[in-house]
Length: 319
Image (cartoon, rainbow, N blue to C red; front, side, top):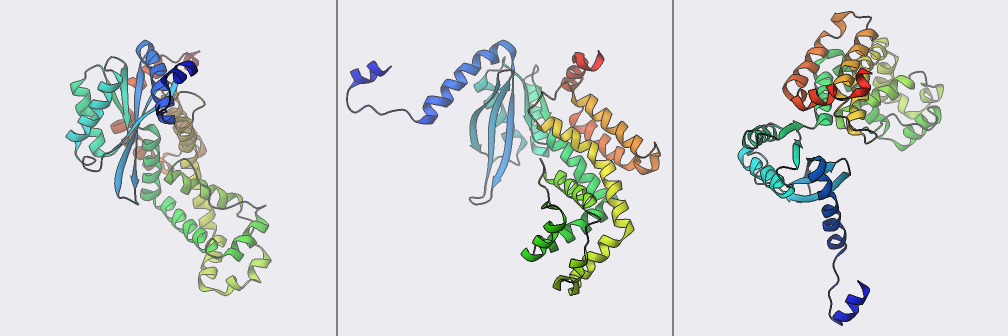
């Protein structure tokens, strides 16, 4: 290659890093796509600076994931027919016979576009993003179960008040072994429940120094202390964690990269529901509404033939 560059002489324009890496990488992966099949993964996000909807496309196969391209879908993001054309073009680019499924988020336009694509290409499956689906379960639990909704609202008030004052944050960290109350998680609504877990762990760390501080005399500070000292607040946190923690474990499975989740998600969801039942000693009145939320999301979004096949073909589940 170096000799060829020398023979070209002056004036040669070198290829960009993208030109050297991405096309070559894709060509290498194409062999695997043809041999074992692949999935097209789409990840949408909103660029708030330029007010554009961006859709990133990746292709996943046993060889790994490779980035394909980003598209501005601002003009089509709400139109299922136009979105279907975009998805169809990606299938065409990767190769129709190579693609087993295409994954999008759970927005109604994407769901309809995926179903339209399945009608056009009979051998292809559309599935929603499992992580997004489970996150929506957590959102519904946080908004529809009164006890959970109440303690999340109170925890967010306390969290917001503390982190509004640097001095108060430093005082808190003094008694929490430098740990924060707010913990980012893999998704937005999982973050709320992980934050509740931190509140539960630090529930006994309200100190005399707090009562000697200037914030203790503040009206919002008094409200914060009142909430923290309420027995119902602690009980509601425990109740919320019993409902959400098993689902967060499933979320970590489907959002992680340690193993492919397709063959495990059915068993993981069944295990999560069993864990919830046992945590309430199978007293259905405590989790009936939550199970209805889970089942509704599961049946209309995640219950797919491809997941069935992955479950029954997974030897680790039945051995």
